Image (tube, rainbow, N blue to C red; front, top):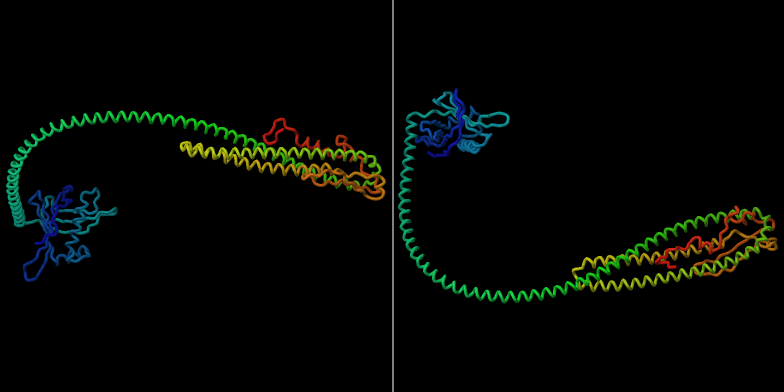
Length: 509
């Protein structure tokens, strides 16, 4: 006999006219070797219940029986591998027997209500579609001889277990008795040693108590001296900390003051920058307006020249205006000199602004040095140093912007002065004396003082002997309905640059 499988498996028992119930059945599978001349290995399957000795069903499968079983149930394996596959199915049922929805189950069914006669043991596989029968074996109920043999084997195994347990119990009692004797001897030895240790401990405790008292006194004296030293050191540290704190507070006040001054200067520079931007925008608008006026005057000049050639008959009437024009030319020379003086004053103001900017730059350099010294001394005010550096950067940007604005203002002033002087001097063409008009066209160039910002200005007047002169509307004032005539340079300057009542930081009165 060679046991292959012998374990308890939960089985569903189904009898006729009875409800289904579950029971724990021991399934035993053994290989039997025959003693006849032909070597045969049969498979024995036995179902028993450990709680019911009369429950006994068995099945013997030979190789010939397996062939008929294979054909009937369409098995795909051979007899040699059938025991292993049967054990695998049983173990699969055993592993899933505690699940709520097991996939493999063992079904034990009988046609009689009391499990008499042959029974059917089936391995059922359950899926979501149906229940399929993987294997079905027909077992027969054991006879009285088989039951008695089984009970005798069980009794023999129980007796063998009992003898083994009695032998084990005897050995255990002997071992416990020996250990108890050893323990009693060890306990007496431990009591003796405990007594000795108690005496030694008492002596050591008394001696260590004296030593501990002396050490405590020494420690108390040492602690008192260290505490006095510590208090003295703490007082010294507190006084030093107080001095450092006062110094730091004074430095912090100084830094806050300087930071406030820099913030005020930054605000003033930003305000000045906004004023300059507004003035620059106004100057650009004024420049555009002047350009439009120049274009209009050029168109008027072209129309005047056309009218001059068309109305040359009016030349005689223009002779009476020669004296007046000469006087106006003198006035224009005086206005040009005044304009030159105004330009000089503007240049002086520009130099003053440059000196102011250089002084501010020197102050900024001094502030840089102070900030570097303070940042090296006081690391705790690093945030203030960053603010100061950002303020200095803003001031440097304001200085650069101031310089660029001064250059732009100078360039605008230069071009505005040139355009204004050219407009003032380029009046509508005037007629020449009658004697010169009879022969040919005459040109005159009044003397005007030149400056770096003023180009050469040419006054031109031409007339033809056959013309009668310009129309009288060109000699009327604007308020009388005539063609607009440009005023003097002083009037232009006063009109284009009115004196501001509020003094500027960059253009003082």
